[in-house]
Structures are given as structure tokens and as C-alpha cells.
Image (cartoon, rainbow, N blue to C red; front, top):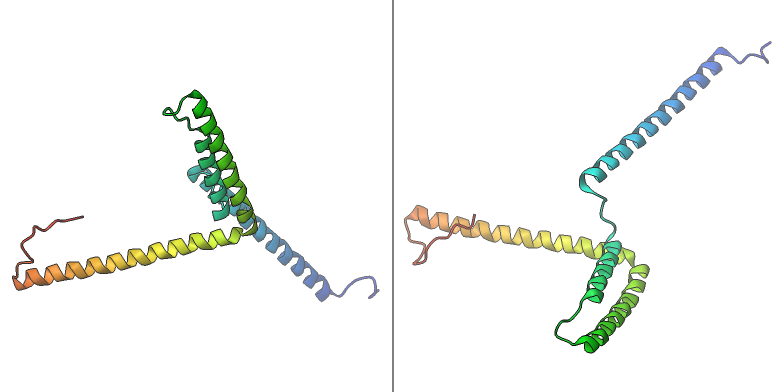
Amino acid sequence: MSEELPPSDAAGNDAVDEVRATDADAWATATAEDLAAEKARRRTQYGPPPGSAAEELRKLVENVADKLSGLQSPLLGGVAGTAAQQVVKQVVQQAKAAVEPVIERNPDVFDHLAAAGGELLAAYRSAVQAQEQRWSRREETLRDKGDDPGPGERIDLD
């Protein structure tokens, strides 16, 4: 008889493990659903998210190429204008052909360059804010002492 029925402790542990597995799956499912709903909400509110820096560069090159290809020069005559337009199209195609392999081989480089640009902008902003604070303190110090800050007129930039 003992071979047919598992001990009561073993049956209880299996049930607990099954409930825990179900709870973990439910949690993962609920989290995935919430994340998908939030992404959909943001997509409708803000539009599609920007791609990687490499994808954005590719889009920029394509848009510039389309604009340059569509330009028509009114200064050149009909024949010269057509020839100039063909030259522009050829140059645009060569530029796209040169840029595309670089983007394909090094997509992470453009992400790093974009991040570095953001860091440079933050550093510049910090330096400008620090300088503005020094200028503000100097003017306040001169006013507190009763000194005239100079012959010029004070301009409030805010």
C-alpha cells in the first residue's frame, strides 16, 4: 500500500511547488502584459521610439539624398539643369554607397558617439551654469558693497 500512495508530506510539497510555479508564471505574464500596455500607450502618445544612432544616421542620409535629388536649379537652363541633376544624383548615390557599409560594420560606434555628444553637452551646460553663478555672485557682492558695477547698463537675460 505504501507503494501506491505517496506519503502525505511529499504530496503537500508537490502542490506547493506547483502553486509557486503558477504564481511565478502569473507574475511574469502580468509584468509582460503591463510592459506591453505601457509601450503601446507611449507609442500612441509620443509616436514610435527613435531607433539606434546608426538607424537615425541612415534615415538622415536617405532624407538628405532624397532632398538633393529632388532639387531643381532655376539658374541653369533646361539642358544644363538636367545634366546637373544627374551629377547630383550620382554624387548622392556614391555618398550613400560609402556611408552604408560603415553604418553596417559599426552600428555601436554611432551609439557611443551619440552618448559622447550628450556627455559633452552636459559638460558644456555645467561649465556655463558655473560661470553664470560666478557672474551673479560678483554683481551681488558689488551691489552689497555699494560699488558701481561699471559704466554699462545691466541687462537681465532671464
